[in-house]
Amino acid sequence: MVLTNESRAKGGSARAEKQEKWERSFVAMLGGSRRPITKDRKMSPHAAAFVLKTESEAYPWLMLALLGRDDQAVSHRLPHEEIVQRIEQAGGVVGLVGLIFFNKNWIVYTRPFSTGEESKQQLDALGQRFLAFAGSTVLHELEAAASGSPVSALVWTDGKEISLAYDWQESTTSWPGRMVAGVIYLAKTVGGGWQPRWKPIHEEFRHIGAEAMQRLRAHIEQIRAAPRFEE
Image 1: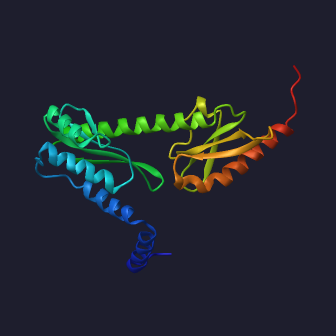
Image 2: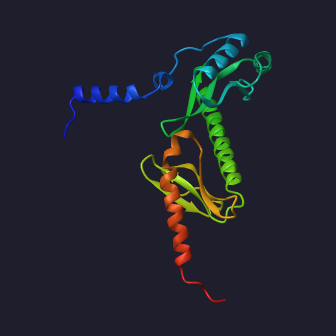
Image 3: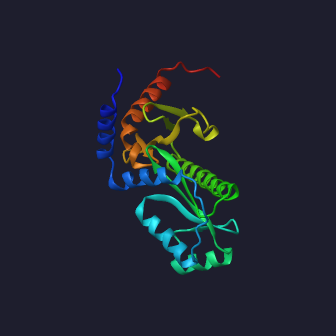
């Protein structure tokens, strides 16, 4: 079936209606960020700090920072005066870098204030550091949640299907094109039994917990039914 322009427009409108206001705004901002700037944007430390704080309140960032000319990140979580002081010490800012969970994925957002390939490379490098930190932090939290469980699995997804990686602590790079959605594990109950638990990395993945628990139960039943090996 060939979609007409009218059909595509209706489909796009329907998707947009399902998005929250901040999501529609973020999509527009993300599209605008792909256009290269034609001249340097000069701003005072106070103005740069204001931009950082304003953007931090507009979207649910995991991380957001200004990149100073000394290649050091200035986080939006710092007090305003400290942000200004850090920018002054850095001799100005190169641009803005943020990491946000959007559309079932981690998105790195960059906004350069200076022209030139070097500025872009500096911002991209900080974005990759954000991604690496977020990945290690998320995995650490999932590992802590599953600590003490006799059976646990890292749950991966491409947005449609899920895959479970048992003994995931040894390998967290399976299934290229998919991302970690959370961990499924067994938790001790008051009565001394075990109950499946699902810890997603984000609320957007909470709905796949039922299928992950069903998969875990089936896996446990297979273990119970498997023949025991003689020593």
